[in-house]
Image (cartoon, rainbow, N blue to C red; front, side, top):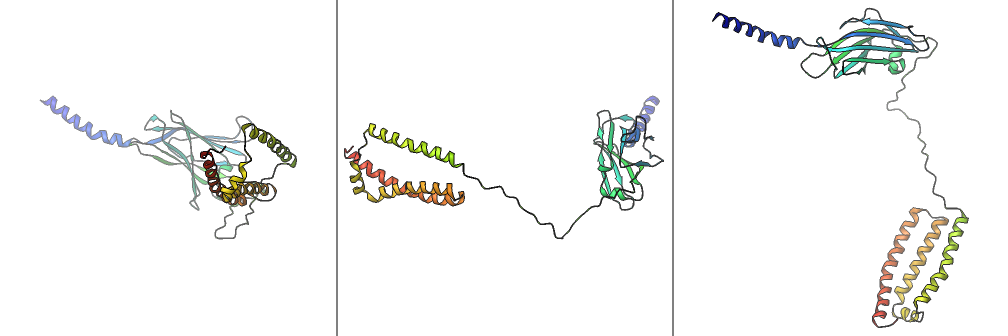
Length: 290
């Protein structure tokens, strides 16, 4: 009985301590280093310092115009190295409160790295007088608390002989005039090509006439056709010549927007008058006239 009582007490103590242990789990980092390498410098030159685990570096870090800032760390949840969902380097100007975040490149084992130059910084950071606050932000899904702690102070070193870039912003002001450059109008083909195709079309007309004669065209029906339906035949032929004239104007002077309405009107007239003319031809065919 006393044994069961002792086991019950141990179970109660374990159940009360378990949530505390789970809640105590939090994100952090280890094996963190910050280094500054100058372009053109030899191997081993530059600045390199280890950042204490989950603490800030005591000495400031200087970043020149030709330098590259590199920060590496291993994200861990509790004491276990893991890949965090979000790992950022957070830079902030303590005077103005302006801030910006840069994401780390994170591997599955939690190892993270980031490289920055002055070109990656906002223009406003290039003229600050005080060092920037650099913080590390680590967070992910789950119950573990996110990490948000100071890492080091970043001093942006500028060459005094080089002008500091400025931000030009114009709100509600006059903007420069916009000059539109339109595409050049379509040009007609060279005259030689046009004459070649015209010659081919004219050469096909005798061939067409010969085919009509072989098939037995009867020109004697022309007076009968124009006598039975003079208006449809005349309008139909006139609309065909009008369409050809529109195409000639398009080649010489008109543009596409000018010929489209004209072709639409002439085409409609040709369709209506052609239907009436074909009706007259059908009547003669049904009457046995060939």
